[in-house]
Length: 252
Image 1 (cartoon, rainbow, N blue to C red):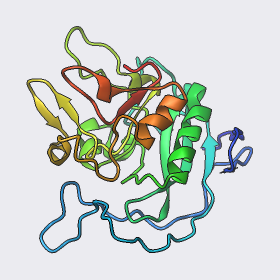
Image 2: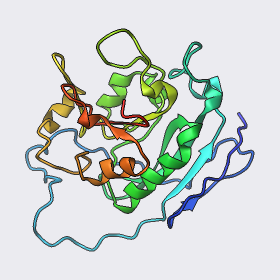
Image 3: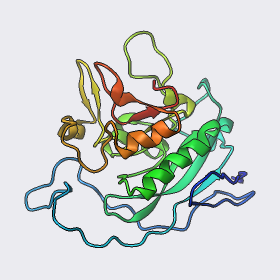
């Protein structure tokens, strides 16, 4: 499908790429992301935890870049959207952007969000890229047939998914259903639902939030600060059932 692509500009030393009338706006290919262990290191493996020893000189990375394509069509979101959802695929955009993996290399991922927040989302991930904040994986939820549990279990960072909120009370749309929320590093930042448990299950290794490790969200850390800089709220502040992976335009 041929979709329109637009250039997004904002302050900062980053490269934004776009191509008008392209089939899809994509960045130059990058190496596939290395698999990152969901919990602690296995026997004989080295921990990702920082040590006081001197670190080797970091390799140079390509500049951050992001390409935006859209409006989308139903065929672009075959599992995450359906008739009756609160937004149309026309309201959504796909962002292809560079991020840093746990292997400290640059990778290219895709995230789908509402058109109204594209520039803010790019700004957030540009900040994270410059800080070399590690992200395990970034693919649309459609890769997992729209299954939020499967996406979380895969430690996937994602945005739009037309689903109900996991919350007590009458059914209500999640902010993900509007493309106005993003979950980041779902294993390192689990959702702890009161009376139910930890989601995903592998996130149990990260319930102790005082043991700060790479990829985690915590007050004052770069992940929470980057979203706060664009006015987004963090689910980690929710009382009773903190959702450490969750960021949204209104904090819900």
